[in-house]
Image 1: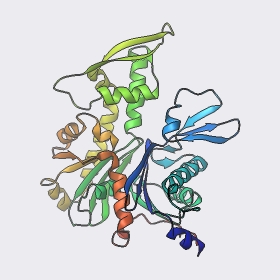
Image 2: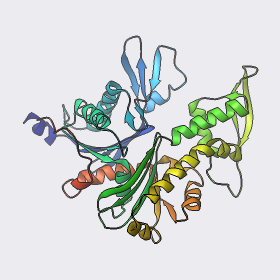
Image 3: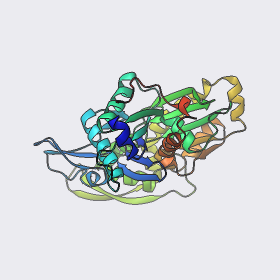
Image 4: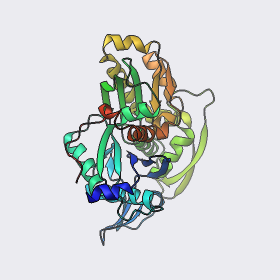
Length: 349
């Protein structure tokens, strides 16, 4: 009864709980929060110092007793308590301008396709403990397709490839359900690791994660460019141990991430091969859609199209498609209940 009373003063929210970023959609307002899924913890006291944007500023710049961590790995909860604190921080931030003293919102959260019951339960429990009144889960490729306004409830093939920070989700959707899918733990963060490894092994230079992310955005590409790019990067020379600046090209970055890109392409082809023949026929006259931050890598749509011999299009605003899909489901929960993942637990009363 109390939950229903508090719920009256709470704002229903949709959450894209990503490995790299967390986006929060508020019913009637749209996306109001887009912050890194990063938490800074003081190991001496066990307290959380900063969450989100402020914690990101600390990456690679803290003393030994302060750990800057990502509580989600490949879209799955790896640190339950820290995830709970992060969710509570975002829920409270949404309600800080309202009169709700104890927010109890309904929450729709995107989870990777193929998550185990244990992983689903971890997300649910973290959300309930963070203050949610009701928790609904939706597979991220389904949320991305809904966010891109694809006709997911029609009897036709909708192919969505969601390349996030920690995982790549490939799904063929028809009649409100996933017909064939693959979840691969290779995505944007793996590209960063590839760049760090390449520079260490090939150029004797050590760089950090933030620098690798910056290089990927500035110079990264999955497919040969009409005009190749180049730029300076700074790091530590592994021979002398001193700071050094070198020039690197987009061709080198493409070589560095090529194995990971190839793994994604293999999974896309395998998912399409599992699709029933009638739906395969639909694909010849429909686009395959890319979403997520990884779809913004130069030439990603071109290399996917080249490999699967089908037209490929990047959805509008791919970074927010999952969050927008969660929000759309939230606002049409009764009509779209069939697209939700079955949960093991009822809302607390």
